[in-house]
Length: 407
Image (tube, rainbow, N blue to C red; front, top):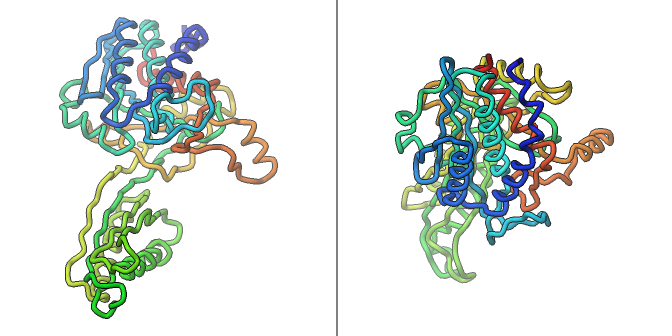
């Protein structure tokens, strides 16, 4: 038989996967707190006759060794978000203020489905398959946690690594792209210092509220005037905090910034520009203390290896019907998956799975408009269409693995 023939029988396990997906969706857990999620994954793997091991407190890996051949690593993230669900689904989150608003429950279920299919059809492939369930992707802590706990010494070295993500794209599609597919992301906390005074005596102050305002305005010139047209960059000031009363001029202000780039050289130039502007505005305002910069929630660039992406794209095109495989546009979201293959110094490919109502996209395309009725990831209304998203996501994991392991 051909190496993908067994996928024709996936209907026999989709009921199990649908129930599993709804269970994960009802019981979301935040990053590095995914204890019940990890326990459920471990239980499902045990039921399949597979051993698993914890790497970090809530990270989990299982290894299927099936003779000679390449080693493939497939990763699914498992954490949820501090979002209150507003979907109206009969399987909505039962945890107040926590929701699988980014589709990681779908990722877990698809990877478990792929593990089951590969484990039950060992005659169709040869090599080693590693399923990795990673915690805390949303705050860029999970990949680091697993690596810090010795991941590279606890599993065989993979030849290639794969990951996928459901996105607000038409369900029934798989979207691939070589090169940058997700942006690098950095958050920055900037503290600037003034001199506090009574609100009626501004001449005795160095007003950090005014200072912060001038910095916010000047930062808007970085992308418009310092980044070459055609290069991608985002500089967003998400918060400006200072003071507590109308008649008190405070002595400091805090700005929270978020940066997104597809090129690490551009990223470095933007960071240098931010620090230059902030320091100059502080000097112009007469601030007597240097500003401070704290960088956090830093996500690496997800930059697909050309050969790895080409291999999975060809495998997808060979297996799926015409029109399923689509070229992806790079997304401005960020992710920490690439830290794992980078630590092993191996190539990787990362693709998107459409998960939203395809008819709404079709109507919007026919009208020549952008559909704004489809909730995006992190929205309280984000709700992937289970069918055929779950089937396509499961098959994509298997087909990607068989592009290397298929006999």
